[in-house]
Image (cartoon, rainbow, N blue to C red; front, top):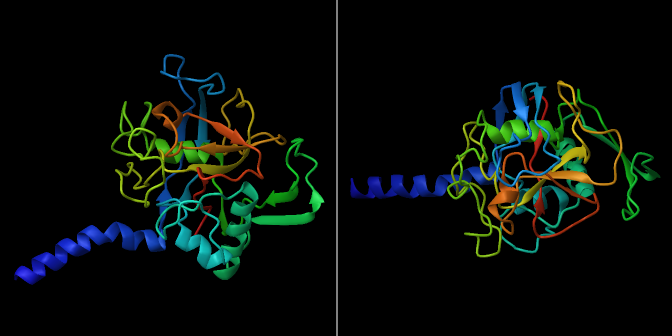
Length: 272
């Protein structure tokens, strides 16, 4: 009896690690929400114009893509902070979309992206991006992809409307400057949101599909961002950011060829 109890406890402790190895997709029931932040929100930035958005149902990774997952598909681990169940980082936006296609191909899914490496994207206006692959997205494909910025915020909030899905403090949900000891941590150790998603606040920033730009002033359905731009959007904050950068509405943008130890990503599928 004593052995049975001990084994049960061990399995309970190990379960987040075991789950992290498979990173199941969670069904995110679509709906309408207020994207952005109200003018009264602390640390609000001018690019967080609050507006109504509707997103359809989609499926999102419970965790950020781990180094084990990335290496199994891409055959390498570019991360600075090494550990199988740590989120992969030091990945560019191009690395992320390429991983999506490689994994889709391995699993026999329809590729979400067409990647033309020999063609320069005419919509990429960055003077610093030397890659500029022409990447187009088929929204009807069932393969892996990056979330749109609207999908990401809707999933992060999980029905909440405040600074964080945990209220006014991210402490219980996030690894960030105040508690991270200046490095990333294994996925799934903090409190999930109402959808069952972990590390939506902190750990590593997560690439989104969208070009960075001003939000539309109307009430769009399934927006996918501006048609052109110089930087791609990241969301969620990281182990190296203060709590203000982890807010559900907080936005960041990077050159799509950027790589650093705070940049990772999370997978989405339109359908299973």
